[in-house]
Length: 293
Image (cartoon, rainbow, N blue to C red):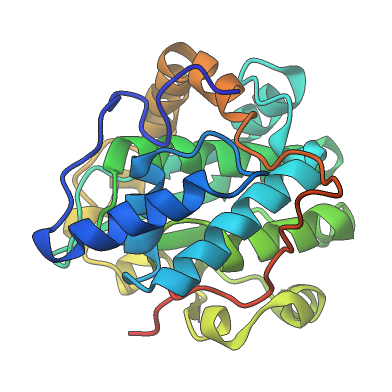
């Protein structure tokens, strides 16, 4: 059982809900409390998932079920969420995971990911997926239910050796989670400095990608300044903000100091083991937080 405030660390009470959706959030929260295998989801979870699913009740229910199920059945990704553990620290020290400071005019948050250590032998794919999910949970806690996210994956330094380190089990979990259970509105995914072997990457992941997510992908052989306004970017990408490495270090320290106990506590947000008196079946349909602009 969780003992801290979720999904927002510093919000113990319910967030304000748009007037026209107050009843929907209340109805979904009532439904949540009736699910015998659900963890201690809060009214803020009901709000967050409804918002991510564009206020569609059935999609929100399916996303919550999928979220609880994946967290319970993927311990390599969602258990032992200590940011100071050896595996997570290794990932944080060989990557830059950064939330950029300025929102787009539409109110979207930009998230940027790239390698800082390009040695493939040092990469543990399951730990990378775990760390990525932890970073995103922290960002949801900080942002709340915002209009959406734009993701920038920088492939500079990625080699074929990294592709060889990908484990299919964690990859399948990750793709299912992002498409069916991650409670955000995902607006666009830019792959910049696209590597020459991108077709091999896509051959690996395409069988796991649904059309909604595929429609969000955009590839670019140059940097993000060619697709995102310079005023939104760090200095090393041609923008005004601190370099990505500096922003990463600052945010890494924040996660380690302010969010360590919260992340460990969040490991309890999973469905309880199945017994003869309960039968929640994991849904397969993607929810509507994925949008094609």
